[in-house]
Length: 131
Image (cartoon, helix red, strand yellow):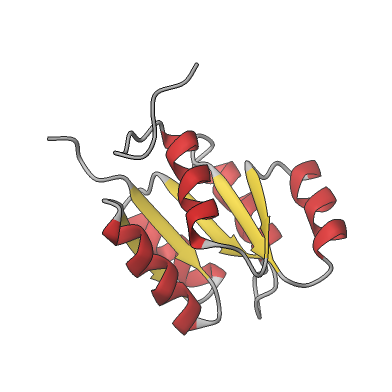
């Protein structure tokens, strides 16, 4: 049996982070969550993750800073940034700084799942292998 892919959800809206985590768990991911950038880095130091999904606008360390730190310390770890504030501008900045994907809020959880499945090569009953 394949080992579950571990996804770290980072959002200062704890209820949203929990909803995303629970949704991903239903589809076979091992989802963790942190409510800020520092907590996220602490989590990743203790246990590596397969991908990070982070809000951009958070108090303290924002999602851009977190992404840069993740890319520096764990270069192979994909980072998906999400935001509902100034989404078009944030998307440009996110990709210029090295984000692997960007999703504007509000978003459908299935959109996030599809991006993660594609990024991590995860096969599901609703997805066929593509080149």
